[in-house]
Length: 393
Image 1: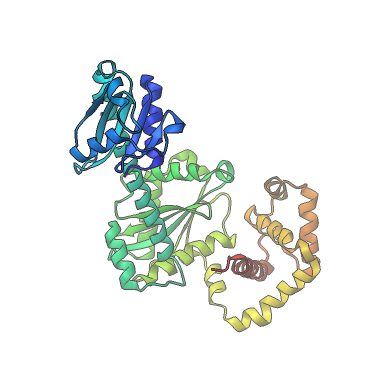
Image 2: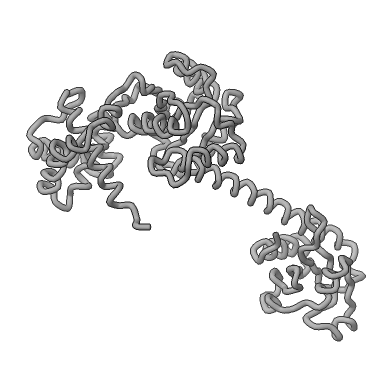
């Protein structure tokens, strides 16, 4: 496809290399790319002839005076991979002077278009895969399991394969990195022999990498072997130092993807992990499962009253206080790390924690049994806030 953006790119790149003015016309002979902005949007009569007859047209100074929107030069049809003429590229100048570089200009234009189409196909596939992956893990789907299966097959995945969700989170040096850093790590993972073509993977907007890893055997201990071998082969030693991995259990069918992802994400958000441990398997950690299995009445009568109490106690500072508590748990009560993460003073962290304990009426300590109750309160608060903050569609 030849659009204005690609046309101008052709004009700019060829002009910068050869020094001649370049015009690029679409299939209607309208100039959509040029070194002369005043020519954009004008009709080029010779280009129309070149398009209709699929021939190169040379125009002298005298001939140009008799034609509409034409200057001396050479105009060559741009042909796509299917052999169709999709536009024209023209070089302004004496035909005798620019004739020898005409083939180079035409070849460069067609190469730029082909490269752009390749990139478009790549991003279309990637975007389609990201949408598919988000649909796969959504608890509120608008399409059937059969439609999801067909969709996955079209993308190239065997949806009958056994898979588990693997969340890769990178802390320390990677904690505040851009998405491109995670993309680089994912590309590194994909180059490993252990990453199969049938493994579904993507960088997620939440700031982590999600992989649905294929399994030959689905027993818990076999899952552990597969994932540990996968990580050893695909993650380099430096990245491992900053990585924590959360692996969901295996479940049957399309619905199993939602459950396995909920396992992995539940651990990731629960704060059960330690800094000196890199891999967590859901069958070894059950807090997230307890949280997910509490009924609505328990939330309404036992958990949400605590949330209302916190909101009344902290007022407009509730989000700030709860974020501080989340960071305290994530950093395993290392207040200096929390302070650095939130760009506040260490004493402010300690003060907010004490105020939270005063509000709740019980201590929040590393390893304390009371933390289970607080983690349920915190997780439910974050879940309600996420629902509230979602835009209305």
